[in-house]
Length: 137
Image (cartoon, rainbow, N blue to C red; front, side):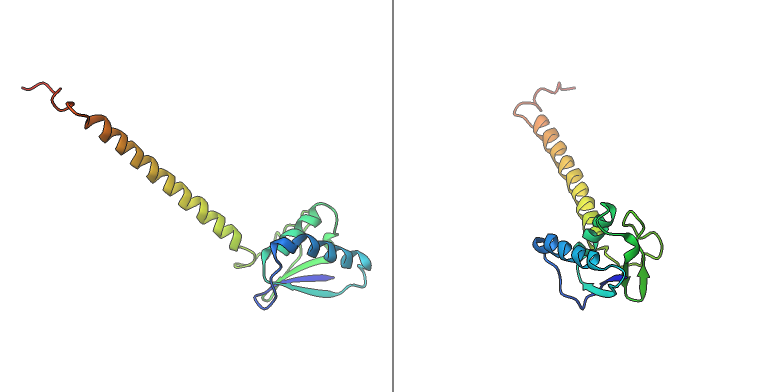
């Protein structure tokens, strides 16, 4: 069984090295899967996502892998998904960042459209002479 532990005490794997990291990982898993009993410690989500993708693609047997975060050990299904026991704080940084990007992007877009509407309205009704075109009572 190979355990991938998500911990702050590990070295990060660069996005630029993820492909090579996964190839090395798959070679270790395929070398002698029944005899392999080791733990890989990672501090970034990339390696975990890559292993999950490799499971989904059939490159790694999901039964040989487990993930660990703090005191929680999780087993992925054949789709690379951890269905039960997904603890808060486990590989959720990117999701939180994407959520904030979308949330603030939508807010900014709405605000910009409102400003554009107001400016258009102000420009339309503040043209020279437009106030003079109003009939007097």
